[in-house]
Each structure stands twice: as C-alpha cells, then as structure tokens.
Length: 278
Image 1: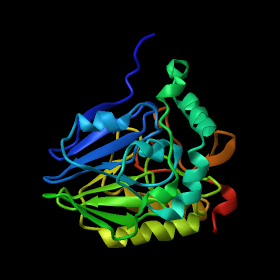
Image 2: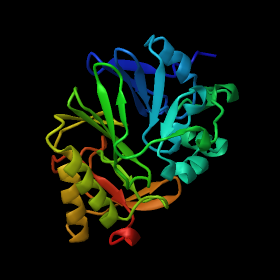
Image 3: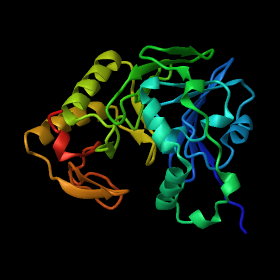
C-alpha cells in the first residue's frame, strides 16, 4: 500500500512555518531563539510530534486554539500543551475516536488507506495547562499574545504574533466561519466577541492567518465579519442552505465552488437562524 504523506509545510516568514494536515487543516510552527510554539495539532492522524521535531531543535510548547476534532486531536504526543479550559466539554466530545474517524472520512478521499495505528491516542484535557486572555509566550525574538475570540466555540482563542504584526484568527473568523454547532455562540454574542478582539488588537497587525483554506486573509477580515453580523440581523444576507455532518445551517453570503464570496469581499458566516439574537 502506498505510504500516506500525513503532513507538508510551507514557509510563511523566517519565523513561521505553516503545516498542512491530512484533511486540509492548518497548523503553525513559530520559531523563537529559545523555544518554539506549535499552534494546533490537527486531527491526530500521523505522528505530528515526530514530524515537528525534524523542523526545529527547540523545546516545543503547544497552543490549542480550541477543542475541535481538527485542531486538538494530535495533542497527546506533546508534553507542554495549553488550552482554554472553557472548551473542556467541546474537546471531550470531539476527541471521541468514532467522531474523529467520521470527520476524516468526510474530508479525506483516501480514508481507507488510514490504519487504526495511524490515529494518535488522546489525553484528558485536565492534563493541559490553562490558556487565558492575555497569556503571553516570549520565545526569544518573537512574542505571542493570546486573546479571547469566543464564538466558533466558547473557548476559542486568537493569537497575536507581536513582532511579526500577524494575527491568527484561526476558526474564530475566516472565509466560512462555522457558527451553528450546539456549542457555538449565537450571532449577537459572537459580534460582541469580535468587536472586543478588534478593540484589543487593532493597529497591531498587517496580516491575518487562518486554520483552513490557503491560510491567509486580508487585515480587514474582522471588520468584514462584524459588518456581516449586522447584515444577517437586518435581513440583508443571502441565506444559502448548508448541511454539515447532519446539521442544517445557512451561508450568509453567496459563494462560488472555492467558497469565495461572489461579491468579492472576504469573510463569511455559516449560522443557525435560531440563534441570531442570542
């Protein structure tokens, strides 16, 4: 059987490496002079720990942006892991092996080539260190500052790479922000969260990094998302039906096959009509 390539990389900057996982999820290795930080660990298919050790000789700290299956499932192979414990229940639900397999099967066409031994065993979230708003990691030459970005999940975090003038919103705001899961915020609460994130970081970044797609977004993304919340609330959205793993939701603005907005703006929300005013 042909050997699967679980990961590949591309360079974002001298200090940032983007890692592509099997289902298209994106992780980031940030290299300081003294320590490296790995942001997210993917679906836990393949040994990410061994892969990352070939990319850096520094000790490695892991930051999990949130507890979802495609971001936190590979964390067990690392010793120094941080996560916002508000997402403990999300992590517990999403790191069930059957759910992980269902997700990978839905996203990866060669699913049948994956062996059971390729799945990393998970660990309980109480083994993770607490990640809170304002937590700072000084890696030597580059500083990471963590900010609350709740909505996609209750414990979702964004990360500011201060010297690089980069903000990683990850799944908090992107070209297809999922806001319809039972654990997701309602639209109004999410809008407040994004306004708070922008208040704390505006003027401190020139570039945004994402956890899916190409991984890049214009710096206007958060402003676009906030305006989109207003459009949805005022009835100015397109409301395209969207089904995902048994859940029905609506895409706020029309998109093409690549999920780019037809109107040319960047940033979209897939939401539940029942939670617009929550």
